[in-house]
Length: 386
Image (cartoon, rainbow, N blue to C red; front, side, top):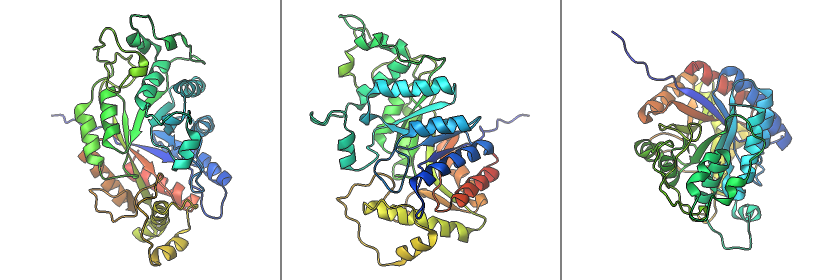
């Protein structure tokens, strides 16, 4: 009599390079390198760096630079972006940057793509590729171009009566075996639908916005269309008119044949529940401050507890927030941050992953103390037996 064991739950890391109060952004970047080596030794699957702009709170504005540094300092862990905010950039340039990374670190580079601004409205305007034109969401076209630049065989589907698509003549350098693995990131039903239609692996930012977690993951899994489906129609439209969801004929390295979803969750582990709750005060205050458009560095737990105990100020609903979530009661199916002893957190994470049929979770941990952050990842790895 034999029984089939479920796949082992993989753990990965999302690092936003948080800046602790009393320290510098340079210190935060040094902490990120230290964390990279630490989680590599512990056996985490992948390490992704976020992209945020003009924030005293987070030092990671250029994930591609941190990817290069971390990949050079580690041995086994996959390293990538969580993610590159594609609307700010030309697809060709992103393809060149990540082709370079792939040539330097073969089979270890992930290219997570998002369409959020990663900052406020002013930063988004300053980063805009064309400020003279009316704002246009051309993310579908950008994504199609990016995939074709990294997998040139895709250009064939965009040929028309006039001949091959002009971009098919562009040779993305440096060339190397394989390509970076493209993931679509998001926290909405739009991203879930797009990832499913395009046959791409999908990572949902639960720690950012947990309201649609189950709906998004289940929709993606149930509506996934393999990237290798062969349904390309003759006379494909010019790329400038491309919409998400067009038929594709992808190589085995482009996208997936089966759905692959992951979930980014917040975690703080400590030897006792009391200490974990104490450390969590820094994140609770961070979330409240962000809602007030306050981008100061991560407060100590003691300072955070004092500020949280003060009379709260009602948030201004007109202010945008981009690096956290609403300072609201935890009334969702699962909390944004799982906080407690490693045994408790491991049990909760396994339950969540089982409920959503996930084989991987991406762990985001922010504490004021770098040592407490390293310890949290250690305790979780031990409890989860990765």
